[in-house]
Image (cartoon, rainbow, N blue to C red; front, side, top):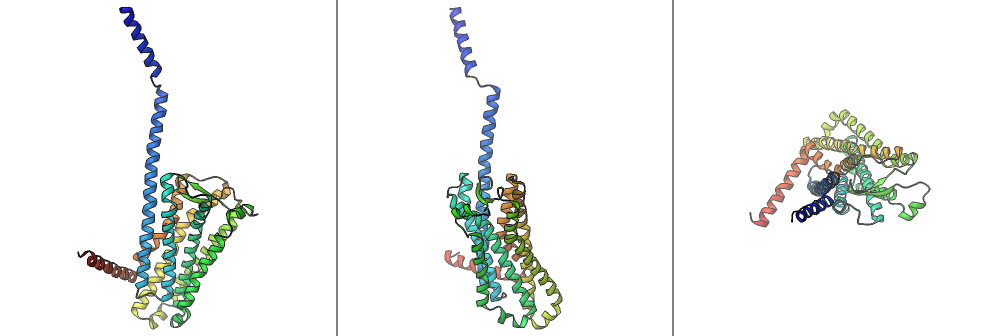
Length: 345
């Protein structure tokens, strides 16, 4: 009996030895579990961030459009250009909700290569369109100062609508000129769209684009518009300081407050656009110059810094223009009244 018991104990010990997990295997499995937990948490955080950005952009710009429409202090031309800028930013929010929320959850691009190209084009095209409308707003305010008495004859509604349409036409011509098959045959290589799961978006990759070709693209799409805009706003601020005494003689107190407030808020909006877009442009330049992808977390924050500019303008308007805040408060009171009447609160 003792020999049989010893034999069973030996067999049981052999089974335990063959089925036990080595310390190295247990360490690897625990690391995989931790990576899985971290990746799941990252996906949840990224999706929440993308979703909140989209909601905030759409709500802020919808509110901005309504405030501008009912404003008593803005001219017709200023209203048209500001609404065009807000529609551009609102479109950015719609694009985020359509293009980026599902890929952020799924960790892959479900819409196909052609739409990946369109989505990547939108990132650059909408940014360029925003700069164009800020340039028009600067020109409008410059005309208001230098041609005060003839301003309404020069900046008519028809001219403002034509001017607001032109940047859209130019951007469509620049950023959506060729379908994918013709882009592949082009002598100048187009940037290839890539879905980057860490970023949660389809973006242009300039790794395989030669630096001289990228600099041509960068000059047309960013450097020239920014130089024009900064010059216009510098001239605007200098002219406003020189004409301060002259403006005060032929404008009422409210008109003068409205003019000074609009100059300040559009100048700050232009400065905010430059601050938000420049890091992302530097990132693309790094890609083209070194033919290497940047760190994922840097790419994520720089891209989303540029996209988040779509709601910066509303915050700038509210903090820099007292009359805009007055109109916004009136809209909120009307909204509160409607809600109370609807739900009989």
